[in-house]
Image (cartoon, rainbow, N blue to C red; front, top):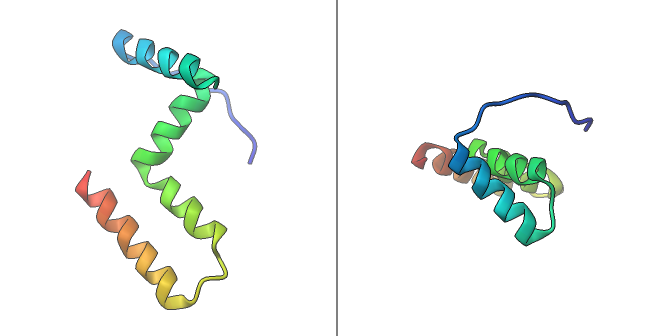
Amino acid sequence: MPKLRTTVALDERVLRAVRAKAARTGRRDSDVIEQALRRDLGLDVLDRAGARADLPEDEALRLAVEAQHQARAR
């Protein structure tokens, strides 16, 4: 999927934490931010479920319900 450029305003402490994690893990700041957003929005669960699209319907439904519960818990 193509990446889009955007501008956001972040708390200074948050940006420092992003940059520190990026440096520790050898990734770009934008990758750290995207991963955090995907996790918070529940997209990481959807990505994992999509990667296993060959699952039987009952297992796919179980994953969807699990993702819903995780999103509500936040």
